Image (cartoon, rainbow, N blue to C red):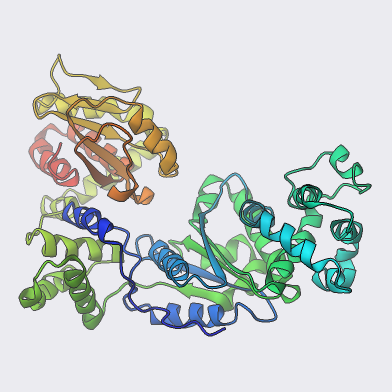
Length: 505
């Protein structure tokens, strides 16, 4: 399939630019799925896979890289691209479901949610054509013989659309009781049969020239939840790859943040690794001078910051930092374009005040004590000490440890701390809308890995002045413990904490 203009810059909606500019002005790395700087190897490999999406077999790529190097941005660029061209390729973006580590069942749920109506119409249209049902199910050879009765019933011309829908649900697992199957005279399908059902449904869609890119982000979350679940995920991924030659077309893209590179995958599941290794796409740091300059120019044009005459100066400032993550690079460039100033980071102050060894010692002691678990229960005691010591919390002020916030009456601010980096954005907005912030400015301390942006915050009625402060709860907790336990270094540590919280604490 020829896909024109892939990797060209896309135009953002005008109403989003101010929000994105606000993200940059606050030192955040906003979602910018409108262009991909550098990453030529990734573009080439993924572009090649996309060009074969209507081919004789399903394909996959696993995108691997450090946190903050643009994996999510790449997926969201592709979604925006395919949504804009409105062709016969659907790009579906999802985040890994830690409660459903079986990839086959996960994809079937997506098909159920997105394509049930399409499948009903396609099956009605195709069931009078001889031989297709067997073709879609690998001619009922090998394990496909176990779903032959199911496929024959699905193709039965006596069934109306409602009955076909129920049969599809029997295939996806939404309907699963023995009674649901016996009403059609069928033996119950087990989960291991659903591999073949997935092949069947994908082949029906492909026959009607409906091709799907399934993209699954943040699969490292499954590993963080449970090594056993991660092993199950990789095993089901391997089983799907082994079925690719029986599926006509489609593409699966997965993303994983992997601090140890490919070794973690190889150690977790050698059989899977041997299959996925040729299809891994790595996203390295953007480090070449010409690529960083392209990023600066692109952002200057996008946000109309009119810094064209200062590009070389900004470039030199950025190069001196030698950023280790693309997210930090983007944040620094935005800071220079929007505010024209550079702020000293907490890490830079830790180095300046020679506190790195103390940080590591404190962290190690807290790990031995088990104090770095359930931080939402431990965080507010050292925070209260710090606030009281710096006259930010007085007797009349409110510190609500249960709901994770405190009111700074002096500055008319509400500080809300989030600890769950996996919280669903809809749940977060529900929480925000159920809490009264009066006329205070709302400061939302958001875990870095949540990657919360201004555009994701939705207030239904009230419209408070809010600001998102990215932070690592563990790091801030350690800084607060260091402040409490080292009286001789409190002045320096207060400066570190202030820098870490953008001068709000």
